[in-house]
Amino acid sequence: MWLLTAQSVNPYLARAISFPVAVVVTWLLNRAWSFRLARLSSRRGQFRRYFSVQVLGSLTNYAVYALWIASLGTAQVTVLTGFALGSAIGSILNFIGARYYAFRAHR
View (spheres, rainbow, N blue to C red):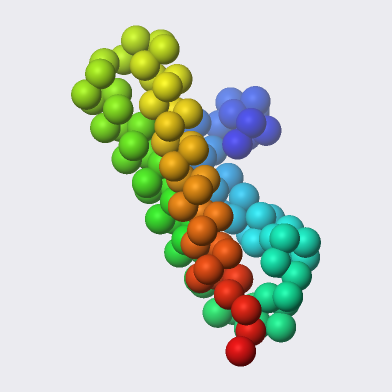
């Protein structure tokens, strides 16, 4: 996203382009290192599960952020706190979903 916005690409478009790229890259990295035992699973099915987890985590992240600033205002500290809370909750949800759903052990 940073590379795109540095080239004056609309930030909303840059985010829309960067999200699927980030999902593919993090899926490959997680498959190679974090969840090595899951490499025996079907790549296609695993990627679909991982993508759905990432979408849910991203939506949760944004929902927490949006609800926080809608409730408490848009002062800079409030916005940053909402961003941090949304990121933390989304990250936790993404990890749990990756560990127990997307990269579940091959049976």
